[in-house]
Image (cartoon, rainbow, N blue to C red; front, side, top):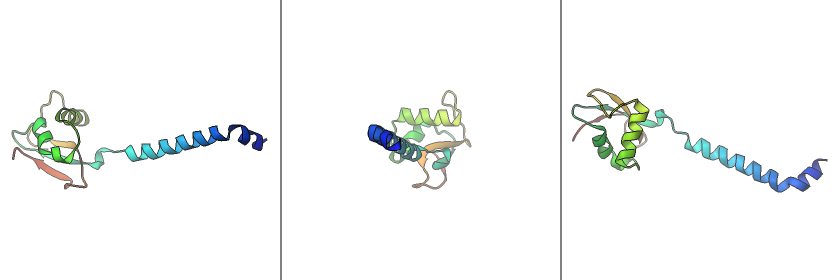
Length: 105
């Protein structure tokens, strides 16, 4: 019975198994949580656009994408940030310290 099933459907079984394996590998590789990003402390006068510019060498997003990501992940409405806010930004902590200070420098 198993030989008959294998003979008739071996390509389908192998295809499905390969797809499942690739899906698991890709899903595991794409999992990036907030803990993978750095936290910055906003200094007086800083804006999300300026943060996008300041960290432009550390991410591959446009400024608009960076600002939208930061707003969404940090629950910011209207782009308003204040001195002392702790923001998670899409910069992996591998290149920078876990907490940075964002300024206009």
